[in-house]
Length: 107
Image (cartoon, rainbow, N blue to C red; front, side, top):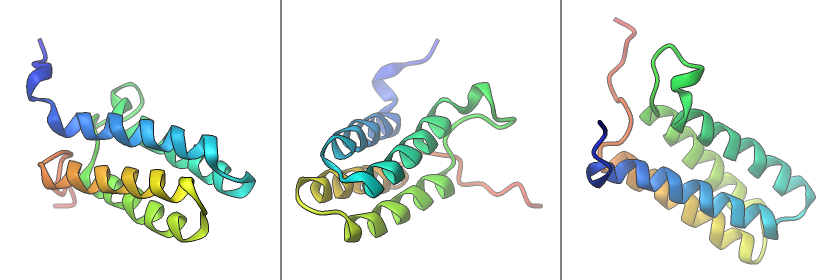
């Protein structure tokens, strides 16, 4: 049984997805397409036990998402920027709180 009380890093990924959804609702056409792609990637990381051989979010992948969001914030405008930056911050907090598997399997 999973103890939901101590899943704080995963709570950040939930917040990332919520903020990305809000950003998508306020974004213009090219930005919303990119946001949908990023949201799908976050979902895949969070729910990857169905499709990945090593399930669970990887810190390096979440760091990539944060980097993409940082760049996207520069292209977005208005309220969308706030949501994108908030999502990025939750990605960074996820990593800082020890979320993801930071061990390398490259021998």
